[in-house]
Length: 384
Ligand code: HEM
Image 1 (spheres, rainbow, N blue to C red):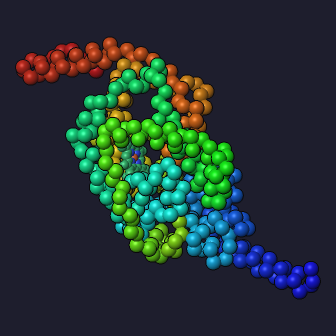
Image 2: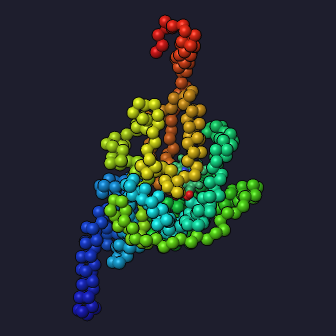
Image 3: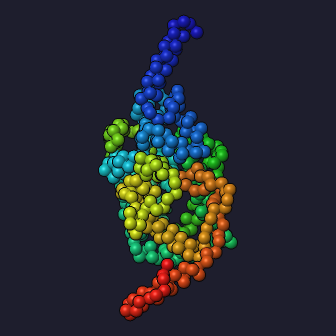
């Protein structure tokens, strides 16, 4: 190599490093590595990704910007990722400027094998058409019908494993891996049928067979005939002040939102169900849907929210009436890294029968006192 070429390479490297140190200092999120941006950090922490993102957000006051390809021109455009858990930003993204924040081509390509162009994986007209159609299925009447069909026996340990549920869980777990890896890597693994891509393919075959069967037997009509016609997104400014260029990505961490001191107070990591009660302790007060985002918010809020609450409440009522439940001491509760949060080793619990005697006795005495009051008779029995 002659001297002038060596000098040119040296100048290019030094210029790149100066640019890198400038861009890393301007991005307050995780460390930005040469070329790969914050990708090494994400891969390194992939087994505790949600906590890593929550830690980053905590350090940055609820919003940060980073890049997944540290190359001039691209870093502040297509490869820029704005990560937030600030309720004000969420309201802006999910409601005020909803049309400017579609799921986008990257999300759609990752999910296409699992979700096709269905409601979860489409934008614009295609999504709206499916949303309107699906909303018709979530009326009070259909909720009642669904609950009437629900059989508590499905909680029994003897109940055979549900092949569809197992395949779906495997498929969602494998799909999350695609998010972490660069597109070219997961596409290569897919074509070579390597690792989780292999189990994804097998699970999808199972899911397809299962669903086709249901579709055929119930003669469901295919609803996805329209093609999405999205407007091109525009540059935008979030409520927190972060500038979001058109074509970049934005991620909101539902997991982190539930674990931020600035949203829930210093005791945010403690299990305190009473924080949902009104001051007089008589009413349940659910915070606005941009602070409690488990079901998403805005026009894309979960359609099954009421059904999910109904199921959770009926299961809780059926179990807790006659049983006391405690976690098996020493059981490891760890998250499984998947698209939905569930526990890696399940939740092993001990189930103890509840002695309903004292409760029934109290109810009986209360009822007796009330009926005596109604008849004008004063009770002398103290009611605890
Ligand atoms: C505890 C249970 C549930 C939770 C935490 C939950 C949470 C969510 C979340 C976060 C989204 C937004 C997903 C996204 O945009 O990518 C969503 C969307 C959705 N959920 Fe749920 N969900 C639950 C149960 C259900 C059930 C039981 C059903 C149906 C029977 C359902 C149907 C839907 C549908 C159709 C959407 C898509 C809405 C749209 O994009 O317009 N969900 N849900």
